[in-house]
Image (tube, rainbow, N blue to C red; front, side):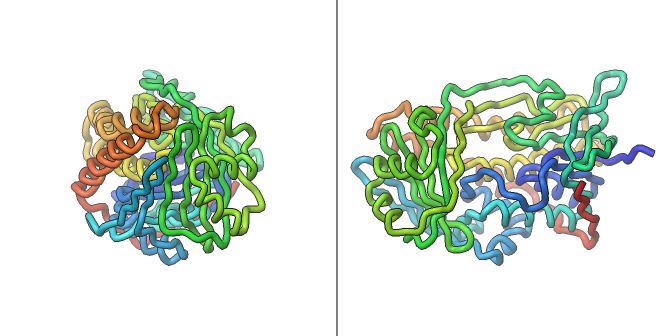
Length: 394
């Protein structure tokens, strides 16, 4: 007999695992699938802004992030051509510090919370197609495990949380509603023995860089520029761009222990896709992606996970009209994201001067503040229930 769930979530990273966890806490049956393995690393600048930390706290996950040795960040420093602006992280909305956990720390915490809530999780399971009824509504998924075993699952709603190159978004032909103009590239690595003082963001015309303290006494150091300037990335490219954007940081890097390897993202235009349809929805980068120079992707992922989960619960558990509930989810997401998307596109395109960038970043900060107000006003989320399901690895 074909296994049936209220919701199948495809993608067990931050957006997908959080969505699955919330759905299960509200009492829905959920299957969470991911082609990768449990706890594997992925590209990330790690940083959470206040809205993301607020979500982790509201859901009872922040203590686990802290217990994993993630250092608190109590200061953010902006460096421009002619100015240095330190900003203390003041306690607000119950958030006393910011955090930037490695993905090898964060992703398992959220997946484990999903399992504790009753989600069935299968890793090593790649979705190949969606199933549909005679009216064309999505009714489930099909795919294969790493061992070649075919699997099928039926669901009232299928959620694509599988990243910027989302298989689900392509299978349901989710149209692009907005596409950015800019493509920036980023190269980064994790330094040891680096003197840090919270988040550091350095901006000069043509190059940006930053420092994000994370787990194991290390700091993620990145450089951002046009794809042409980043090239293949790596240590030499990063050091050159850091020297342009912050000579003082370049000197500190020279005295620290460099990473054994680097990672490079060659860039992609930001996008907003239609994120709902008959029997399906998108969350995270699958539906809304912007350049990582904003360091806001993870925060938005947690915000949108709850917005979508509440919409799906209204449909499945409360009998709300599907079209109305899911379109309202996207409407709220877009209302909170449009200004941020447009500003990030300008920053990532380096379409600014040294004199203009401070005001652009102040506008981004104002958009973040509005987002925090909306998150703080959301009703409480049920805590985890005392039940577990196994984690299957295909």
